[in-house]
Amino acid sequence: MDNLQAGDVLFIDSGTFIGNMVKFISEFNFGHVAIMVSDTEMVDIKAFSKSSIVHINDIQFKRMVIKRTKQPLSREQVNQLVKISYENLGKPYDYKAIFSLFIRYIFKTKFKSHTYELDHLYCSEFVDYVYKAIDCDLLPENGNSLVGIDDLFMSDKLFIHKEVIKWLM
Image (spheres, rainbow, N blue to C red):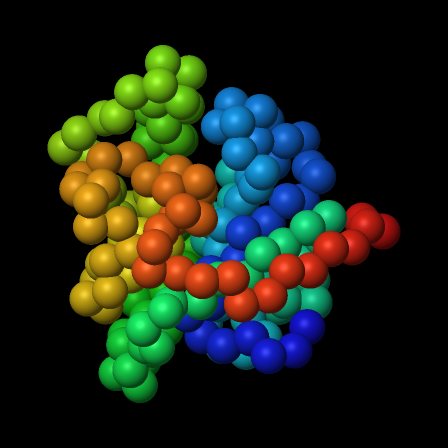
């Protein structure tokens, strides 16, 4: 895939069981989100595994939307984004927070006072955390609520850079 850059946010419909479950519970079109750390690599935080770097060509998906910040990131912000992303590799999935997020969707409510437990992360929590850390808050109106994939997708600070549709192999 061409024309990607560090900081791009990937919204992924993988067609997997977990991805479909997330889509069903959240009533949203995507079951996963990730962040690019170069033009070919992303940080991937999925259930049942630890956060890792994945090459863009190794992603299996049916549909992916790539979003980019409306205000371009500075070189310093990109460097910080990459540094923070690498510092958080190998962390386990945040099942406690994702359970609370699912409760939020089921009961259609907002949880307040969510604090990031950086020893455990889930995909949209990680993207939100990284962008806040580089002083580019994608969801300033969200405060400290749990962050869903849909919240990030609807951010008015991002625009659709590209959409890719393909069938799983």
